[in-house]
Length: 375
Ligand code: HEC
Image 1 (cartoon, rainbow, N blue to C red):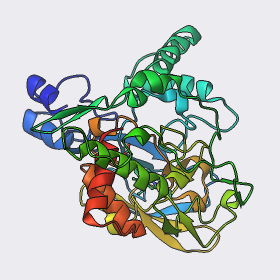
Image 2: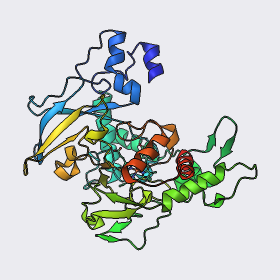
Image 3: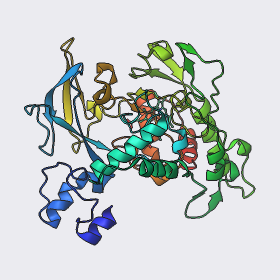
């Protein structure tokens, strides 16, 4: 994006005020103004999504602090500016919901239908084009569903190690999937069939040092083990601790795979949306808007940089909930989380350490990072 901006002085078709700029009213009259106007796209790869609060929502917008001066609580039916990362258009065979907030895949539709809707909305809204025909939508969806991507080697300044067949995109394409293939809980009880060894890509390297004497393969395998088996306590996660599916536990002893449970992929195998605190007020950075939402029922207020799923369902409990995304090909697409707030993989691991208290020692932290870089 930065190269494209520099090459065209910010006039390439990506740079448009309908979704690329921080505000639809941004000044884009000269190159310096454009550099500011498209700051979120240039700094964090964030696209502006404008969504209203649904008419039947259980809450209203009572304050809007928008650094770009667009969103105001005094406008009738204000459209909120939400800054979100584009999701990968690969490995969609394993998708259980379409978009960070699932807005393109209501439960009444199949994922294929959801992807078809998404394709059309993207063409009419982001690309400002015409409605697509049924045949065009189907063609795009078929194409997307045939794309698989994963990391195939990891490099540092000294060595490059091949990750082998089990981690290859070809093996990934053959991986079985159906909705709900591996949920840890069903109907409020733990699922006896749940396989917590969500990732089995690096089993064969189990702890052994490489022939080269390097510990790097063993580190990746140990990191996989940490992802699969290290337990920690989950409290206060809307979408999990208040969910009937999990039996509404006040706290739950869990692993990374409790949420990231699709075998060898890592998204949630059921269309679940959770609030891990990424859009909480105390994690707000100055480049994000801050919204105050007030419950119509109780008068209680909450502040968030992005209401997430709640703008689709209108439910108070869904504020700040986002889908549990797939994890393959991770190293190729920083920054992370819906709002690009974590600049690299170590930064994501540090988020989880501070949010859930994983208790990793320094070597374990580096092992988990090595594993996530090898997906
Ligand atoms: C309570 C459920 C839950 C648990 C437990 C959990 N995650 Fe997540 N994970 C999520 C959700 C939800 C998101 C999306 C958050 C957002 O963007 O707001 C996410 C996002 C991520 C991302 C960013 C992916 C991207 O494309 O931006 C990574 C990496 C990740 N998780 C790794 C882990 C690791 C490693 C662990 C274990 C230490 C873990 N997660 C535990 C729910 C969970």
